[in-house]
Image (cartoon, rainbow, N blue to C red; front, side, top):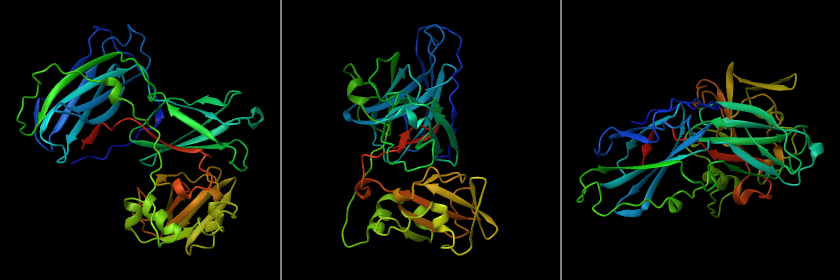
Length: 377
Protein backbone atom coordinates (compact mmCIF):
# COMPACT_ATOMS: atom_id res chain seq x y z
CA UNK A 1 0.00 0.00 0.00
CA UNK A 2 1.56 3.29 -1.07
CA UNK A 3 1.68 5.78 1.78
CA UNK A 4 0.96 9.45 1.09
CA UNK A 5 4.22 11.36 0.94
CA UNK A 6 4.21 14.90 2.30
CA UNK A 7 5.74 17.38 -0.11
CA UNK A 8 8.56 19.44 1.32
CA UNK A 9 8.92 22.60 -0.73
CA UNK A 10 11.70 24.62 0.90
CA UNK A 11 14.98 26.16 -0.28
CA UNK A 12 17.41 23.27 -0.54
CA UNK A 13 20.11 22.97 2.13
CA UNK A 14 22.88 20.46 1.46
CA UNK A 15 25.09 19.34 4.36
CA UNK A 16 28.45 17.69 3.82
CA UNK A 17 29.48 14.27 5.12
CA UNK A 18 32.80 12.98 6.42
CA UNK A 19 35.11 11.64 3.74
CA UNK A 20 35.76 7.90 4.01
CA UNK A 21 36.72 6.47 0.61
CA UNK A 22 36.39 6.99 -3.12
CA UNK A 23 33.69 4.32 -3.51
CA UNK A 24 29.99 4.59 -4.20
CA UNK A 25 28.41 2.37 -1.56
CA UNK A 26 25.07 0.75 -2.42
CA UNK A 27 22.96 -1.43 -0.13
CA UNK A 28 19.77 -3.25 -1.19
CA UNK A 29 17.60 -5.17 1.26
CA UNK A 30 17.68 -8.41 -0.79
CA UNK A 31 18.08 -9.81 -4.31
CA UNK A 32 14.91 -11.87 -4.92
CA UNK A 33 11.50 -10.17 -4.79
CA UNK A 34 7.84 -10.94 -5.37
CA UNK A 35 5.04 -8.61 -6.51
CA UNK A 36 4.08 -6.06 -3.83
CA UNK A 37 7.46 -6.45 -2.11
CA UNK A 38 9.49 -3.31 -1.42
CA UNK A 39 12.94 -2.72 -2.85
CA UNK A 40 14.77 -0.66 -0.23
CA UNK A 41 18.13 0.88 -1.06
CA UNK A 42 20.65 3.31 0.38
CA UNK A 43 23.41 5.05 -1.52
CA UNK A 44 26.39 6.61 0.25
CA UNK A 45 28.86 8.96 -1.45
CA UNK A 46 31.85 9.08 0.93
CA UNK A 47 33.82 11.56 -1.21
CA UNK A 48 31.38 14.44 -0.83
CA UNK A 49 33.74 16.81 0.99
CA UNK A 50 36.96 15.65 -0.64
CA UNK A 51 35.63 16.32 -4.13
CA UNK A 52 33.82 19.57 -3.18
CA UNK A 53 30.37 18.36 -4.10
CA UNK A 54 27.98 21.13 -3.07
CA UNK A 55 24.86 19.53 -4.52
CA UNK A 56 24.14 16.14 -6.05
CA UNK A 57 21.35 13.97 -7.39
CA UNK A 58 21.06 10.19 -7.46
CA UNK A 59 19.53 8.94 -10.70
CA UNK A 60 18.11 5.43 -10.32
CA UNK A 61 17.41 3.72 -13.65
CA UNK A 62 15.98 0.20 -13.63
CA UNK A 63 16.49 -1.79 -16.79
CA UNK A 64 15.04 -5.14 -17.84
CA UNK A 65 18.18 -7.19 -18.46
CA UNK A 66 16.46 -9.32 -21.13
CA UNK A 67 14.69 -6.41 -22.84
CA UNK A 68 16.83 -3.29 -22.81
CA UNK A 69 13.98 -1.13 -24.16
CA UNK A 70 12.05 -1.38 -20.87
CA UNK A 71 13.25 1.13 -18.30
CA UNK A 72 12.03 3.03 -15.24
CA UNK A 73 13.65 6.27 -14.08
CA UNK A 74 13.67 7.85 -10.62
CA UNK A 75 15.79 10.51 -8.94
CA UNK A 76 16.59 11.44 -5.35
CA UNK A 77 18.43 14.32 -3.67
CA UNK A 78 21.74 13.38 -2.06
CA UNK A 79 21.75 14.97 1.40
CA UNK A 80 24.52 14.51 3.96
CA UNK A 81 26.28 12.36 1.37
CA UNK A 82 23.45 9.84 1.29
CA UNK A 83 20.23 9.04 -0.57
CA UNK A 84 17.68 6.31 0.03
CA UNK A 85 14.34 5.13 -1.26
CA UNK A 86 11.66 2.45 -1.19
CA UNK A 87 10.17 1.19 -4.46
CA UNK A 88 7.02 -0.91 -4.09
CA UNK A 89 6.82 -3.50 -6.87
CA UNK A 90 3.48 -3.13 -8.62
CA UNK A 91 1.67 -6.19 -9.98
CA UNK A 92 2.16 -4.76 -13.48
CA UNK A 93 5.94 -5.33 -13.32
CA UNK A 94 6.71 -8.52 -15.30
CA UNK A 95 8.61 -11.41 -13.76
CA UNK A 96 12.21 -11.07 -14.84
CA UNK A 97 15.78 -10.02 -14.15
CA UNK A 98 16.51 -6.36 -13.55
CA UNK A 99 19.57 -4.17 -13.27
CA UNK A 100 19.33 -1.16 -10.95
CA UNK A 101 21.79 1.49 -12.09
CA UNK A 102 22.77 4.13 -9.55
CA UNK A 103 24.22 7.25 -11.17
CA UNK A 104 25.44 10.26 -9.21
CA UNK A 105 25.07 13.64 -10.90
CA UNK A 106 26.98 16.58 -9.41
CA UNK A 107 24.00 18.91 -9.67
CA UNK A 108 21.00 19.62 -7.53
CA UNK A 109 17.55 20.38 -8.94
CA UNK A 110 17.21 24.04 -9.91
CA UNK A 111 15.23 25.97 -12.50
CA UNK A 112 16.63 28.53 -14.91
CA UNK A 113 15.11 30.33 -17.84
CA UNK A 114 14.95 33.33 -20.12
CA UNK A 115 12.28 35.98 -20.65
CA UNK A 116 11.88 36.63 -24.35
CA UNK A 117 12.10 40.29 -25.44
CA UNK A 118 12.90 41.26 -21.87
CA UNK A 119 13.29 44.97 -21.12
CA UNK A 120 15.23 46.11 -18.08
CA UNK A 121 12.55 48.68 -17.22
CA UNK A 122 10.21 45.78 -16.48
CA UNK A 123 12.14 45.40 -13.24
CA UNK A 124 11.73 42.24 -11.19
CA UNK A 125 9.39 39.31 -11.63
CA UNK A 126 7.68 37.42 -8.86
CA UNK A 127 7.04 33.71 -8.99
CA UNK A 128 4.94 31.26 -7.04
CA UNK A 129 5.72 27.55 -6.71
CA UNK A 130 2.67 25.40 -6.00
CA UNK A 131 3.24 21.93 -4.58
CA UNK A 132 1.12 18.82 -4.95
CA UNK A 133 0.27 18.61 -1.27
CA UNK A 134 -1.04 22.13 -0.56
CA UNK A 135 2.33 23.74 0.01
CA UNK A 136 3.71 26.78 -1.76
CA UNK A 137 6.77 28.99 -1.98
CA UNK A 138 7.03 32.62 -3.12
CA UNK A 139 10.01 34.70 -4.20
CA UNK A 140 11.12 37.43 -6.60
CA UNK A 141 13.85 37.52 -9.25
CA UNK A 142 15.57 40.22 -11.31
CA UNK A 143 16.55 38.84 -14.71
CA UNK A 144 19.78 39.91 -16.37
CA UNK A 145 19.66 42.35 -19.28
CA UNK A 146 19.31 39.46 -21.73
CA UNK A 147 16.36 38.10 -19.75
CA UNK A 148 18.23 35.17 -18.20
CA UNK A 149 17.41 34.16 -14.63
CA UNK A 150 18.07 31.30 -12.23
CA UNK A 151 15.78 30.45 -9.33
CA UNK A 152 16.88 29.30 -5.90
CA UNK A 153 17.27 25.55 -5.58
CA UNK A 154 14.14 23.90 -4.22
CA UNK A 155 13.61 20.52 -2.66
CA UNK A 156 10.28 19.07 -3.75
CA UNK A 157 8.92 15.69 -4.72
CA UNK A 158 6.50 14.71 -7.45
CA UNK A 159 5.51 17.79 -9.46
CA UNK A 160 5.48 21.52 -8.76
CA UNK A 161 3.73 24.28 -10.68
CA UNK A 162 5.75 27.46 -11.35
CA UNK A 163 3.75 30.62 -12.06
CA UNK A 164 5.50 33.88 -13.04
CA UNK A 165 4.02 37.38 -12.93
CA UNK A 166 5.41 40.90 -13.55
CA UNK A 167 6.23 43.27 -10.72
CA UNK A 168 3.55 45.72 -11.77
CA UNK A 169 -0.03 44.56 -12.01
CA UNK A 170 -0.84 44.59 -15.71
CA UNK A 171 -1.33 42.22 -18.60
CA UNK A 172 1.16 39.36 -18.58
CA UNK A 173 1.04 38.94 -22.37
CA UNK A 174 4.70 39.89 -22.73
CA UNK A 175 5.87 37.12 -20.39
CA UNK A 176 7.13 34.67 -22.96
CA UNK A 177 9.40 32.49 -20.87
CA UNK A 178 11.46 29.41 -21.63
CA UNK A 179 12.68 27.33 -18.70
CA UNK A 180 14.75 24.22 -18.10
CA UNK A 181 16.06 22.41 -15.06
CA UNK A 182 19.67 21.81 -14.12
CA UNK A 183 19.09 18.06 -14.41
CA UNK A 184 18.01 18.20 -18.06
CA UNK A 185 21.45 18.72 -19.55
CA UNK A 186 23.91 16.00 -20.53
CA UNK A 187 26.47 15.33 -17.82
CA UNK A 188 29.42 13.11 -16.95
CA UNK A 189 28.52 10.85 -14.00
CA UNK A 190 30.52 11.36 -10.82
CA UNK A 191 30.03 7.69 -9.86
CA UNK A 192 28.09 4.70 -11.20
CA UNK A 193 27.20 1.33 -9.71
CA UNK A 194 24.86 -1.47 -10.77
CA UNK A 195 23.01 -4.11 -8.73
CA UNK A 196 20.91 -7.02 -9.98
CA UNK A 197 17.64 -8.45 -8.68
CA UNK A 198 14.83 -10.76 -9.72
CA UNK A 199 11.07 -10.28 -9.61
CA UNK A 200 8.89 -13.37 -9.42
CA UNK A 201 10.27 -16.57 -10.95
CA UNK A 202 12.23 -15.74 -14.11
CA UNK A 203 13.69 -18.55 -16.19
CA UNK A 204 17.18 -17.03 -16.20
CA UNK A 205 19.40 -16.06 -13.25
CA UNK A 206 19.45 -12.46 -12.07
CA UNK A 207 23.10 -11.85 -12.93
CA UNK A 208 23.42 -12.19 -16.74
CA UNK A 209 25.92 -14.68 -18.13
CA UNK A 210 27.19 -12.07 -20.60
CA UNK A 211 28.80 -8.86 -19.31
CA UNK A 212 26.15 -6.23 -18.64
CA UNK A 213 26.75 -2.74 -20.00
CA UNK A 214 24.44 0.14 -19.20
CA UNK A 215 24.02 2.61 -22.09
CA UNK A 216 23.76 5.82 -20.10
CA UNK A 217 23.34 8.17 -23.05
CA UNK A 218 20.38 6.22 -24.38
CA UNK A 219 18.62 6.16 -21.06
CA UNK A 220 18.91 9.59 -19.58
CA UNK A 221 17.39 11.88 -22.18
CA UNK A 222 14.03 12.70 -20.60
CA UNK A 223 12.90 16.26 -19.97
CA UNK A 224 11.35 17.48 -16.74
CA UNK A 225 9.04 20.17 -18.09
CA UNK A 226 5.80 18.44 -18.92
CA UNK A 227 4.30 18.92 -22.40
CA UNK A 228 0.58 19.34 -22.86
CA UNK A 229 -1.26 16.22 -24.00
CA UNK A 230 -4.13 16.98 -26.34
CA UNK A 231 -6.86 14.57 -27.41
CA UNK A 232 -9.61 16.07 -29.55
CA UNK A 233 -13.19 14.89 -30.03
CA UNK A 234 -16.29 16.17 -31.76
CA UNK A 235 -19.96 16.87 -31.00
CA UNK A 236 -19.32 18.47 -27.61
CA UNK A 237 -18.93 21.99 -26.33
CA UNK A 238 -15.34 23.11 -26.09
CA UNK A 239 -15.52 23.43 -22.31
CA UNK A 240 -16.84 19.86 -22.01
CA UNK A 241 -13.99 18.53 -24.15
CA UNK A 242 -11.51 20.58 -22.15
CA UNK A 243 -12.97 19.17 -18.93
CA UNK A 244 -12.55 15.58 -20.17
CA UNK A 245 -8.95 16.18 -21.21
CA UNK A 246 -7.61 18.22 -18.30
CA UNK A 247 -9.71 17.34 -15.24
CA UNK A 248 -8.61 14.32 -13.25
CA UNK A 249 -9.18 12.32 -10.11
CA UNK A 250 -11.11 13.96 -7.31
CA UNK A 251 -11.87 17.00 -9.50
CA UNK A 252 -14.26 14.86 -11.52
CA UNK A 253 -15.89 12.79 -8.78
CA UNK A 254 -17.98 15.41 -7.03
CA UNK A 255 -20.92 17.52 -8.19
CA UNK A 256 -19.79 20.91 -9.49
CA UNK A 257 -20.91 23.95 -11.45
CA UNK A 258 -18.90 24.95 -14.52
CA UNK A 259 -18.17 28.43 -15.86
CA UNK A 260 -17.01 28.56 -19.49
CA UNK A 261 -13.99 30.67 -20.45
CA UNK A 262 -13.56 29.24 -23.94
CA UNK A 263 -16.77 30.10 -25.80
CA UNK A 264 -17.88 32.86 -23.43
CA UNK A 265 -15.91 36.06 -22.83
CA UNK A 266 -17.48 36.92 -19.47
CA UNK A 267 -14.51 35.60 -17.50
CA UNK A 268 -11.96 37.27 -19.81
CA UNK A 269 -13.66 40.66 -19.43
CA UNK A 270 -13.90 40.51 -15.64
CA UNK A 271 -11.60 42.45 -13.29
CA UNK A 272 -10.33 39.21 -11.76
CA UNK A 273 -11.53 35.70 -10.99
CA UNK A 274 -12.78 36.45 -7.48
CA UNK A 275 -14.83 39.44 -8.62
CA UNK A 276 -16.27 37.30 -11.41
CA UNK A 277 -17.48 34.69 -8.92
CA UNK A 278 -18.82 37.31 -6.53
CA UNK A 279 -22.61 37.32 -6.77
CA UNK A 280 -22.67 34.41 -9.23
CA UNK A 281 -22.21 31.62 -6.69
CA UNK A 282 -24.98 31.53 -4.06
CA UNK A 283 -23.53 31.35 -0.54
CA UNK A 284 -19.97 32.29 -1.57
CA UNK A 285 -18.69 35.28 0.41
CA UNK A 286 -15.89 37.27 -1.26
CA UNK A 287 -14.11 39.98 0.75
CA UNK A 288 -11.32 42.32 -0.33
CA UNK A 289 -9.14 44.30 2.05
CA UNK A 290 -5.58 45.69 1.87
CA UNK A 291 -4.95 44.14 -1.52
CA UNK A 292 -5.90 40.64 -0.37
CA UNK A 293 -8.93 38.43 -1.02
CA UNK A 294 -10.57 36.08 1.45
CA UNK A 295 -13.31 33.57 0.66
CA UNK A 296 -15.81 31.78 2.88
CA UNK A 297 -18.86 29.63 2.25
CA UNK A 298 -21.50 28.77 4.83
CA UNK A 299 -19.14 29.62 7.64
CA UNK A 300 -16.31 27.43 6.36
CA UNK A 301 -13.17 28.11 4.34
CA UNK A 302 -12.83 27.75 0.59
CA UNK A 303 -10.01 25.84 -1.14
CA UNK A 304 -8.76 27.29 -4.42
CA UNK A 305 -6.87 25.26 -7.05
CA UNK A 306 -5.01 26.46 -10.12
CA UNK A 307 -4.72 23.70 -12.73
CA UNK A 308 -5.40 21.26 -9.86
CA UNK A 309 -2.57 22.60 -7.67
CA UNK A 310 -3.55 24.11 -4.33
CA UNK A 311 -3.49 27.89 -4.73
CA UNK A 312 -3.10 30.29 -1.77
CA UNK A 313 -5.80 32.97 -1.66
CA UNK A 314 -3.86 36.20 -1.28
CA UNK A 315 -4.19 38.34 -4.38
CA UNK A 316 -5.29 38.08 -7.98
CA UNK A 317 -1.95 38.91 -9.61
CA UNK A 318 -1.09 35.34 -10.72
CA UNK A 319 -4.28 34.67 -12.66
CA UNK A 320 -5.06 36.59 -15.84
CA UNK A 321 -8.84 36.22 -16.54
CA UNK A 322 -8.17 36.12 -20.29
CA UNK A 323 -6.10 32.94 -19.77
CA UNK A 324 -8.85 31.05 -17.92
CA UNK A 325 -10.47 28.21 -19.86
CA UNK A 326 -12.84 26.93 -17.18
CA UNK A 327 -13.82 27.39 -13.55
CA UNK A 328 -15.36 24.52 -11.57
CA UNK A 329 -17.15 25.40 -8.33
CA UNK A 330 -17.77 22.71 -5.69
CA UNK A 331 -20.30 23.55 -2.99
CA UNK A 332 -19.53 22.53 0.63
CA UNK A 333 -18.65 19.94 1.67
CA UNK A 334 -16.38 19.58 -1.36
CA UNK A 335 -14.09 16.88 0.09
CA UNK A 336 -11.11 18.29 -1.79
CA UNK A 337 -7.76 18.50 -0.01
CA UNK A 338 -7.56 19.15 3.72
CA UNK A 339 -10.59 21.46 3.82
CA UNK A 340 -13.28 18.77 3.72
CA UNK A 341 -16.07 20.92 5.20
CA UNK A 342 -15.75 23.94 2.96
CA UNK A 343 -16.31 24.61 -0.72
CA UNK A 344 -13.71 24.56 -3.48
CA UNK A 345 -12.94 26.49 -6.66
CA UNK A 346 -10.84 24.88 -9.41
CA UNK A 347 -9.45 27.29 -12.02
CA UNK A 348 -8.08 25.87 -15.26
CA UNK A 349 -5.96 27.90 -17.68
CA UNK A 350 -5.98 27.55 -21.45
CA UNK A 351 -3.53 25.03 -22.83
CA UNK A 352 -2.90 22.76 -25.79
CA UNK A 353 -5.33 23.20 -28.70
CA UNK A 354 -7.43 25.55 -26.57
CA UNK A 355 -4.70 28.18 -26.18
CA UNK A 356 -5.00 30.91 -28.82
CA UNK A 357 -1.42 32.00 -28.14
CA UNK A 358 0.58 28.86 -27.32
CA UNK A 359 3.93 30.70 -27.50
CA UNK A 360 3.06 32.79 -24.46
CA UNK A 361 4.17 30.84 -21.41
CA UNK A 362 4.31 31.99 -17.82
CA UNK A 363 3.25 28.75 -16.09
CA UNK A 364 5.20 25.48 -16.05
CA UNK A 365 4.90 22.03 -14.48
CA UNK A 366 8.28 20.72 -13.37
CA UNK A 367 9.09 17.21 -12.21
CA UNK A 368 10.87 17.13 -8.87
CA UNK A 369 12.42 14.27 -6.94
CA UNK A 370 10.87 10.85 -6.44
CA UNK A 371 9.02 10.46 -3.11
CA UNK A 372 10.86 8.40 -0.50
CA UNK A 373 8.22 5.68 -0.93
CA UNK A 374 6.95 5.20 -4.46
CA UNK A 375 5.38 2.67 -6.83
CA UNK A 376 7.58 0.80 -9.32
CA UNK A 377 5.10 0.24 -12.10
